Image (tube, rainbow, N blue to C red; front, side, top):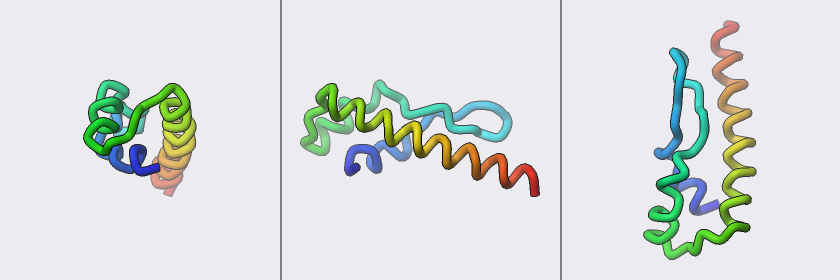
Length: 68
């Protein structure tokens, strides 16, 4: 979770609404190293699960705001 939160400024966005596409994977290892976290395949998979859930929430919020 610490790594995921540290990557919060590393999201790629696109489209006119700035919809989140996902975390910039190139920044994961460097951020992990700076935090003293070894980025193993299991850690990477956990990040991907958190990323997918966060992206779904963010996309729903954008859609709800657009429908107001």
